[in-house]
Image (cartoon, rainbow, N blue to C red):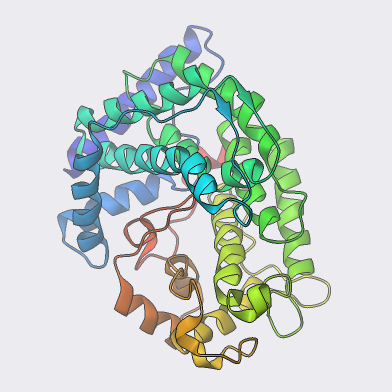
Length: 371
């Protein structure tokens, strides 16, 4: 398997060289957005050696990807999502197609990169093309921008992994880049100060890397620092989120803010801009927010913003991103909840984090990311 994967990568780089000589604007090499090439190679080796938690998560991922092989795109001609608290059923129905299509693209692309089986790549590109060819107009009303910000990045991550597949032509990749620039990017919510801002940041950074837009990447890096400084209080609590729903939704919304901020940090790290240990002028850090959330996730009764039955707290277990943070700052509470929940995934932007990040710190940006 390892040699098959290396051969695929070599073929991709050769294709990129040919493209450059032919005057194509962008080489056909992965831009390395969420996963470095070194990380992909590491995952292949861990599967060969059946290293946990990667191997069990791989088996789950492959089973899901096989189920997705016949999936057809669910793209609307007009993108609009009603507000969740006004029309929950309509909200879910409107965004479900993007959620499931984008996650499917990423999962299928991962399976192609690991196995070399072109069925996965073909199915993923069919979904990407479906969105590029179908969506004509977009709305910024209600939850339209937020939903696009937290679901579309997975499609970008997948498209990037597919860069070297011969069936994903230069023309189709250019069309997807135009879609990212002209339709996706304007829907970002990065300017908001609560979790909407964190999700919009993920969309902006994913687009910046895919489009090779260094100015946009720098804007996202600055905003990452601003949000961290503004959202975390002196105890490490996310003050915009902890009292949501009278506190009942406080853990959920704290996860819903720190998850995208972690994914954004990982995109920046892979791009050679590691902010994990960055400290604001008033001492705010990502670790400072992670540690109390890990404790509340393990012992919801300790959450100080809810006086009711801890069993009624919502979204306590939405902590798949601990796979990233707990490798960097080992924490007994995070370790305990991860051990009881693996393999973990997520609906928003970054599914299968146990597979891609569980048991791994960082591989370091590869040479391609340093160019």
